[in-house]
Image (cartoon, rainbow, N blue to C red; front, side, top):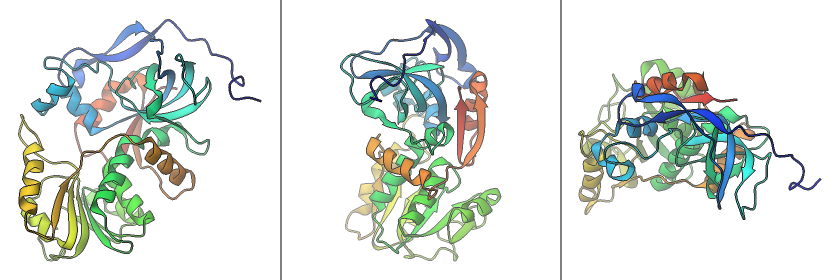
Length: 340
């Protein structure tokens, strides 16, 4: 049967209860609100949300920190009133002139927001089909975290058979970085918390250390031992991290600590200065949505070569608790809100 006619349009209610935010703040600033279900316009589809992953970036935008992010998201309150960017859902309506997707398609993508609701609009350019072998929770965990991990690995450009160090290996990005590096034929060393050592070892890392007892620069991590270093934790001094990299290798800054105003930007700006005249370069990562990369990651999950680490799921009615859990820090793997 033709894909264009194999599914009847499901009934879509006129209103829904979505999680909304009208001021910057903690999880208490996000509350359920009755709103109209939006209609898709050109280049959009309407999704019935199945699952939405919560990322650290969601909580930073929620709080409006560092303050510089408000230049993009709104000075007094966020323009993204409904949080949730990583969404797996079912197409229930299609905007004018949209091709490639029809009602009934199961899809996943990194959206501008809106995932903490029963229905949300999605730009078709951000979506890929979800394979039947990958459930909605696993699929929703992939776009930002796995995409960031892959882009960091690509930027590190370690040769096949080379050795990389993943600092902050137990979070969403870190657990994917370890697995994607192993899948690419790299030897992975990792720093993580004591409670996650067995987990990270099970993901394929050959050497895993407790970051509280083994710090960058210690004897267990000799200078010049790595073709690439992925700094996801963002706390160690750059000069110390740079010494871990071999000549010709790269230190990739995935995130970083910083002040209330600029956050990690100061750290990122210092990277090219510290790289001047050196064969050990420091690169800052600005990850972007890449649907083709997401499609590859879905294939790896479907084949069992990458297994998303899901620490916990929450029902949509407890979305505020999911935000609070991620906002508190130290999440292992991913947290996903399940809508239906």
